[in-house]
Image 1 (cartoon, rainbow, N blue to C red):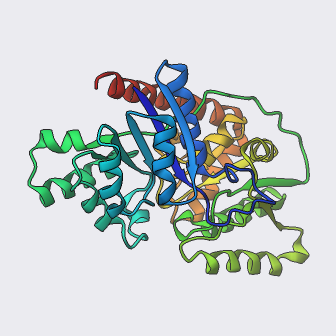
Image 2 (tube, rainbow, N blue to C red; image 1 turned 180 degrees about the horizontal axis):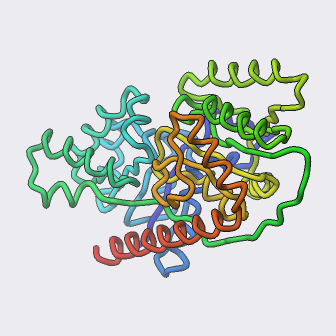
Length: 349
């Protein structure tokens, strides 16, 4: 048995600025973690980044896998008419990384999922239980399959995260560094979190340094970044500031995470949230929404309420080490279960 993970190279790839693999993204990191975990466990695995659909055949011929996992929706279904004939012994798994609220923003999603399963060699992998249930319901209705057939073709494949936990020292200073990292998208909920962070800073007498990522504005996120920038332009005379970080490889991003006092991920839709895991593993307390499947209840806040998020910020601020310890324990439990699920699946084939 050999697994091959194939991702699509990011659309803004620049050979001068980026490495051959492309600059790190959550999807890239997710596949990297899984690839490494499988190899350590004794299941041969490899990972490649494709420019487009036409690269897949060459990569399969090079690695000769038994299973190809295509991360996210980027391979047009009709491409499998060719690929399944060229590689009749390969099992293809198209792995979804979104819950339905996010997936609904991709106009071809349901059409492609339905079309994929017309090919007997294709399976759908889903990384979140709620989306798994919804996908199974859709597939069962479309194809009038039995539960056994659906369970064989639509499988649970949650995210894995390496256990690399650190402890952070919190120094007294006149400002507070609060991050809301990740791509700028509507469901990431940056504006409500920025307002909560501002309330928290004013109530504690601190100057707010609100940290975000720039460079990836997706799914009509332009109004959101414009409002963030305009908000802090009006706050320019108060000492509060917006700090934008360019997208960086993972090693550099972890160093930035380690500089934060609190990380925020009070998002409307999530399946795992690698950014939150990065923060927690660097010893930074996290305030997030219950959409993050591994988050400890101590960190939960209502993403629609800046008041509730502010409350959670106070909790994280007053007891940062407790917040970090509980979230690291919860993340550890989640990833241990993930490892078991993946190994049981492949060893049981």
